[in-house]
Length: 128
Image: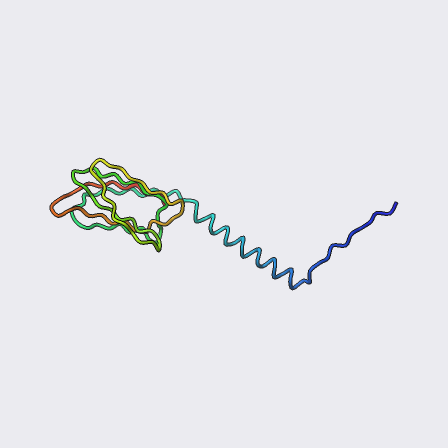
C-alpha cells in the first residue's frame, strides 16, 4: 500500500527570513524584560540622621525594593522617585517601618526631610 504524502506549502525564502527576524527581535526583547526583573543581588544598606533635606540617588543602578525604618525621635517625610512617575511625600512615624517592592528596578532616588528643628535617624536597606 502506497503512503500518501501531503505537501506542506513553503513560504518564499525572503518572507521566511523576515518572519525569523521578527521572531528573533521579539525574543531579544523578552530576554531583556526577564533580565530587568531579576535582581543582581546587591544589598544597599544606609543609615543617617536627617536634620535637613537629604537625597539618596541610586542611578544608574535603580533598586527593585527598599525597606525604611524611622528610628526616631521625630517623624520623617520620604519621597520615592520611580522612573517616569510622579512622587508622593509619605510621612513615617518614629519606630515605623515601610517597604516598597516594584518587582523591577525602578527606584531611582529617595528624598528625606524633617520638620524645622526636628531630627530622625533613618535606616534604609535596598536591593539592586
